[in-house]
Length: 236
Length: 155
Image (cartoon, rainbow over all chains, first blue to last red; front, side, top):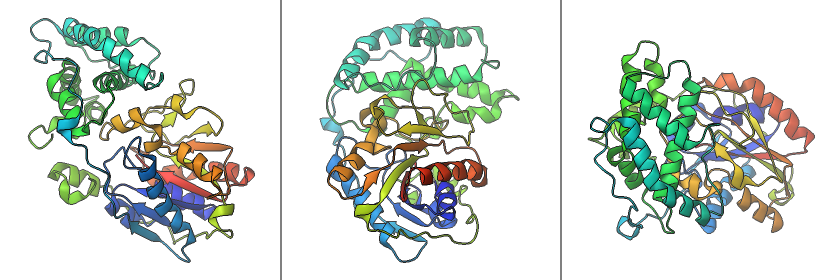
């Protein structure tokens, strides 16, 4: 973001915007930035809270009026916390994750089937909005293919773009199903459920481990599972 | 978050490794008009695009246009990083791409107007200089659209 800010400004377009990692912005010195104390992925702070979002935007737009720069200002307000006890309960009781007993394909397909009605409900609540659709294939086909690869002990080395789209679609599908009911959700608890309780989380972590062990794909492992899922001892 | 002091060591070290020097001498274009007269475009590095657009590659300095009249609820995300929350964006597109908020600001005449087209990049895996050519291309299109200022959001 600092780079775009710099290049646009150099071409005569004034820029302002959000910084999520203050130290990175401080070192690159873009013309104007408002550092916000919000989680990565949430630059405006609070989903569904237009008043809060407007306050953040107003603070960033105010930087356009500064006489000189670079300007890096700290936004003083934390995003309102979610009370995890008040969040809707997880709609599914997940089986112990992992596909060693029944086979990955069977475990993943069974889990997907259980989540289907919840995903439908979530999609209706969001008036049809879904992030699923990066892959050209249906999610059922992708999930089954991922399971078969694991059951056969193979990596999708010749189709990494498919694999990335399929896993992103699957994670979006799960998050949309887990948050089907109206209410506020604790994002760390959602991550905890996804990575520690579901067969999908266990499957992606298995791919992650296998990618790391393969000389051609070791560097690609970083786009499979987040660091927090690889460090469960210090995560959620 | 994201106060580095709140993060585990491995995460803090990863983020601090992204500290880079400035791209060149300081640049600063102060708008010549008040906010209420500025035409503003949104640019995000969140890897957003519509379903029928090509997704972003694992590393990718290209951009996708987001026409202002399109339904932003249909935007999807093909950012290659897996290390940020997506549940907020699932719930509300404005958490990353605050188009509704800016439409409200334009309707209230807090800003002058909104650009005809906004833009999305995918910020991951490349050194900053890799974005120079695409940024210049976007700057040219923004000028054609008479845009005065850009509001940038990372993810």
